[in-house]
Length: 537
Image (cartoon, rainbow, N blue to C red; front, side, top):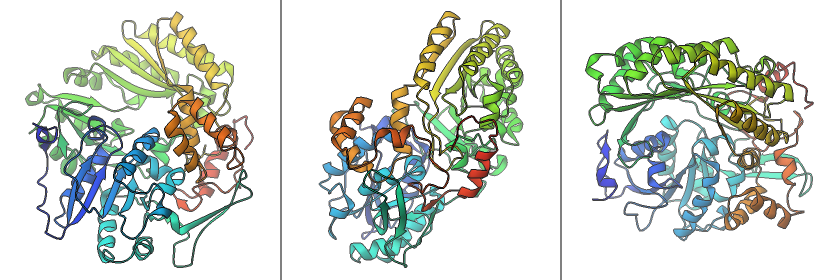
């Protein structure tokens, strides 16, 4: 039995017409990773429901039977370093890597997902089409637009598709620079028939997404995922998950959440509640009561990161009864000053109370997520984080406290996109590891080197494409990227420019022509609200 035969589908795929458009929809990683992505599942389900499409799935380790003459190849990109797999898959299908090397007989390559919606520019050379934003309406609009020019030549197809909101055609925009190693001078369409700005598309309905397939072979085995909320109302100033996905939307309890959960329970007893701020759903208490019914005693419920001040004893108790052993809350820092800078509306007392409630409700562990390298951070702020963690451990003795910690990485379309990565962050991670080890707190730092690579890609422009191709052959270590920069010296700015430099607010950013939910003027105002920041921009 193949992996695909073990899937339990939550929808009935359409029977394709004889002249249906043959599409390959790929995830540039192994099947177990790709099929766990709710975004990938939803887009695949959307395509499979159309009788005018014949869609085949492709992963790095397995594939469905692929069409002989596909017309479209799509990628969902969820993790930056998957670009190496993406390039390998393109080459395995005997397609030129660069869009300007493809001819009329070559298929069109499109992409979407969080990485490409945030900043597609480092990957612009590899894609013909990039879909910016939520897929609910964008996918259908894109396919319908393609059908109108299906038999046309390549350039006519691209020019036509560029008129569809949210459809970005990189080759139709020209980027000029002060010099090969300098800043961007301008980003303009090649002619006046192409929109000067492409706006991210936002789905505004109150029925959010849920799994289209459940399988034991997923990274989260046999889990059925339900999106409870989209975006986050807190708007921490560094947070891509909040700013890029605004506005905050909640799924209707009666018309979306309960029907979705009941549908999922027909094929599995594992439910995952997803969203950046699940417990801030206005009817979350009612959702908890629904899941607490005795008829669901054999159901296991997992929940994404929760807002600290919503961790009640009742929440902890219900989750404990539904098989959850620990919950995760993002605290960022133990410093009031830093929380004010990033707009994290939270106090140490609330963190301590959350830990006490978690223990009272029967949970065994509490995972706290923090960050070093926040703009304006000083060594004293790190000491305050250590003291906060000590207080939490003391107040909830017996509860396993885990502290995961990342390095601040600037993200496009957020107020902190103009800041670079603080080079002191690596030293502070090592200091935390040493101090927290002494105090019996489980410390799980994210790699500083990975944060540097992440920042490079999140702030990168088109000049990085050559570098990405080189590093694919060198490996995904920071040393590989430094080696590639050395080899390409004189052809693009140094690593320092992309990763560590603070950029000026009047600088043209790589995504200048791509509009997120908030205009740049608003992001600058939000940046200026960080009145205690000690760093000049």
